[in-house]
Length: 300
Image (cartoon, rainbow, N blue to C red; front, side, top):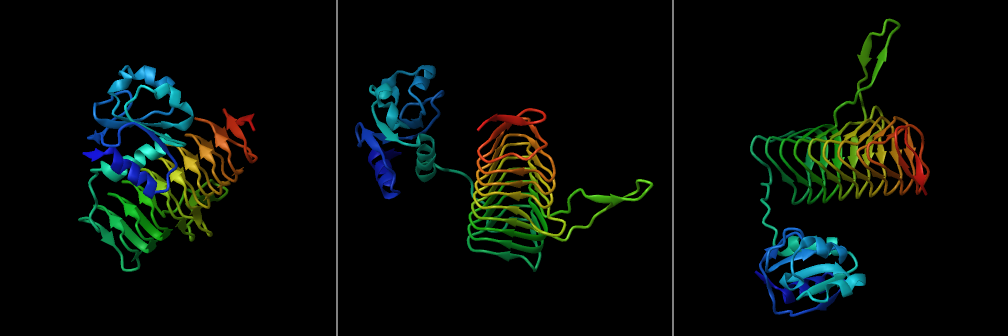
């Protein structure tokens, strides 16, 4: 249980700009979603129109985090915190006061770490992992269970690697003779991952053929994504589940790719958006949204 006053003090300490209406002495026992609200908990709402869908009397809401611009829609709620970005603030409050997530050991049972691996401070590595090669892990990075890293991999600080991720294997690349006998090409590059990167469960990041595959700082990669050799994923980009970046794809900063396929050698500019299920066969300019098969510009 925590008082509203303590929550407000936390926001002030973090430099959050907010306005509050209500009784700071009220007690909050946990958190819940808007659609399944429980009494005496904190929730959030991005628009007053969503309150009607909740089918809960406004007076039952003990504490709600919402937008500053929408205050008139919440005037009957008991306690209201008004901020610019309610989703971010709500989840930061949960993490500070109500997070009961299990924690990993420093190194879990049945995990193998070769002598060449360099591990930073406060790194957590889960169970049944393999780190075998010239691998460097930055401070405060968390690696969950059954993660495999091989060959040459560098991961920055404050990263999160979820279970079942594979990093550093050779990619699918081959030569063939006149009779179409195929010979796989051995890779000699590595994988370089920046700071504050998230990689979701079951994703694969393959090393470059000669140069490194690069995932720049701030990128967020959903589960079951495939990043092929020589890819360069620009800073603060987001890949949604099932996205496939074929060899040598290059993206700019803040690209958003929604469960799409990007052809090899394609370049995406800064702030591009690729719609769900699209197949991108041509380069995309900055600040452009593309959708479809093949993907075509929808808007700038």
